Length: 241
Length: 286
Image (cartoon, rainbow over all chains, first blue to last red; front, side, top):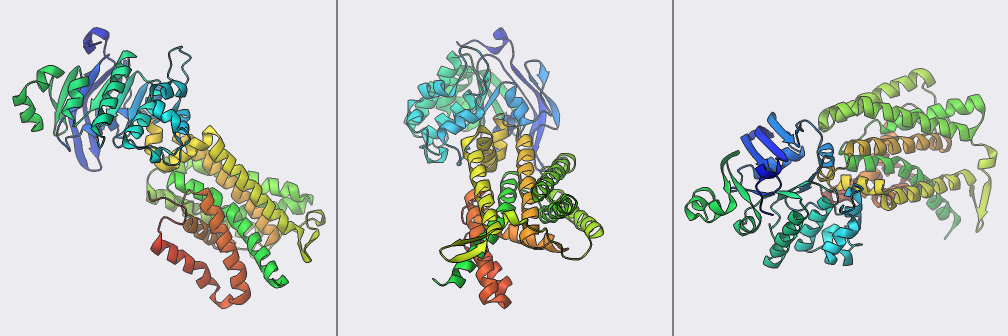
C-alpha cells in the first residue's frame, strides 16, 4: 500500500504554477507530484494550500505554469471538465448543498463507469451506514462528522482516481477525525490516490506517504511523511508545532 | 362576505397568477446565475405583441399563445448563448447587457406596433361567464389562475423530482462547488434562462389578453416581477408563489380602496422586507 508515486507512475504533476486570488499573488511557482499514494500538503495558515487545490480543480486557474493530469495539461479546462476526467474534490468546510437531501447529493454527482467495482450511492451508504439512515434529510442538518462523510461520498461517486481533500478534520470531534482517517485508508485500499491539505499533524502522520511543506505560495520542502513528521526540528521550523 | 370583497380577492388572484408567471422564471435565473435579467419586462411586451399579431392574422388564440411563448424562448436562447455567456461572472457588463437589450426591444416594439394600447381578444369559448356561489366571474381569469397553478406544479416537479432539478438547486446553493463536482453549470444556466423566457412569453400573451399592451408596460411589468422575487427571496419557487399572492392582493385591494396610495402600498412591504429580512421571505442569505 505504501508505494511511492514514482514506482506506479505519476498521476498528477503540478509544475511551477502561479495563481492569484483577486490581486494577491497566492501561488508563486508551486510544484508537486502525486502518484498512486497519499500526499499531504502542510503549512501554516494563509500559505496557499487551499488555493493549490482550487487551482487543480479549475476554480482558481493558474495564470502561469502547467498542471498535468495523466499526461494531459488541464490548465484552462472548466471545473466540471476536470472533475469528469477523474479528480474528486472535497472542499474546505464541506460546502454541502442545503437544498439537497443526502440521497440527492449522491445521485447528483454519481457518474457511471460501468466498472464492476464502481462507487454507487448504494455503495457509499454501505460505507457510511449513518448516512443511509438520514438519506431524506437535508445535508445541512447532519452533524459535522456526517457532513464530512457526505462530502467525501459525494466526491467518491464521481468515481475519481484522485481525491483532493481540503482540511477534512477541521472542526470535527476526535471520534469523527478517526472516522475520516479510517475512510481515507479505505479509499487507498480501493486504489484512489489522495492529495490532502491538513493542519492536523496527527491526520497527516496517519495517512500520508509523502509530505510537501508550503511557505508563501511555494512548496519548499518534500520528503517521506515519517522523515518530516518525526523530526521535531523540521516541524517546528515549518509548522511551529 | 359580500360579493364585492370576493370579486376583489378573485381579481387579486388573477393578478397573482400573472405575477407568478413573471416572477418564477426570473427568480430561478436570478438565484442560479446571480444576475437579474432586466430585459424580462421587454420579453413580456414583445411576447404579447407577437401573440397579438398572430391572433390578428390567424384568429387563433392558442396559436398566438404558442407563437408568443416560442419566439421569446428562441430570443432568450440566442441572447443567453451569444451575448450573456461572453460576460459570465462580470456583474456590471451582465446587467448592462440586459438593460441594453430591453431598450432595443422596447424601441423595436414602438416602431412595429406603435404607441397605442393593444389587446388580444379572448375567444368566447375560453371566456365563459362562470358563476360559483352566486358570484359571476370571467372564465378566462379562472383559466389564467389554472395555468399558473399548472406551471407552479410543473416547476415544482421539475425542481424537486428530477436530477436536472437537483442540479439547478445545487447550483443555486453553491455553483462553484457544484461545478467542481462535475455539474455543467453552463448548461443549467441556459436551461433555466430558457424556462424563464418561455414563461415570460406565455405571460406576455396572457397579460396582453387580460390587460393591455402599450409602450411602458415593459418597465411596469419588470417592476412587479422584481417586487415579487425580492419579497419571496431569490431562487425560491415557494417565495415566488407567496410574493405573487401578496402583491396580487395588494394590487387588487389597493386600487379599489386607496388608488392614490397604490405605489406606496406596493413598495411599502418591499421596504419592510428589505429592512427586516433582506434575503426575502423564503430566500437564504448567500
